[in-house]
Length: 362
Image (cartoon, rainbow, N blue to C red; front, side):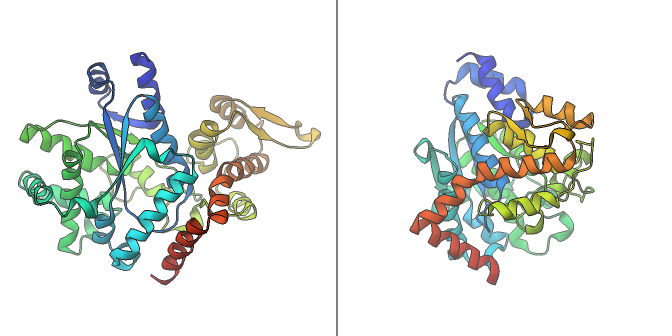
């Protein structure tokens, strides 16, 4: 595969690449570089996690990148997820791997690793200390935004461990590429700075798009210095706001209900969550996007690319109600294999029920 084709697959994933020139150099010298993405086990999987993340991993694999999935159970513990119960957090981690499997990710092609295994090593903690010795307290405070919190929400000393451990993980895992959401950019930039100070390998940062919640765009909340990035983080689909999320377990009727109530202004694509889903999920999963409508409203329509859909929507040739119906049907088609896997498999169903119960009682 030629260099430009490999780069194109990464660009499908990376809304921000730091830096593209470094990525070119990496690909030119390494046929099989290694990337990782880390996950706090908490709650049920929505489409940003259960559908978009596997798509990103698969695109990087097409570029020849080996992938490590980092199940960050101790990070969820530090972040008081699942009531701060580590055992329940680890149960969610097992559920996560089942979601990826159901979404079509070949689990034999990725390496699944757990923070709880790494922390048993003295070398792991030595690396964390080395990182902490090269980061100021102020930088640590600012970096807690990677926890989904602003520096104003720093209330526990344990929270300061989080960014130091995450930066250290990059080097513990020995990766060439950090493929994380745009909300994790402060940790990745800090990792690049620390690497230069300690003469360690400087990772390329590939930050993927944060899928928008059904409410549409929100005003910045102090997660990042860049206002556009801050807005994207504040607007992302979040399990902590379930009414703004579409989950991989949602029924056909639930998906239709949520999509019908979503923010979707006519002729406007900016800040429109359903346009977001069409661009980042639907056109990456299906051959075409279909809209059924009466002849008096233009008849059925079929779109074979996102730019084509965007042009028609902005021009007002596709009404929001028709568009919503098409989005609901496409998402249901995409989600169905995951939903049915958890309905058919006794072991998967047991995991799902346990995580769902934990969400209710935490």
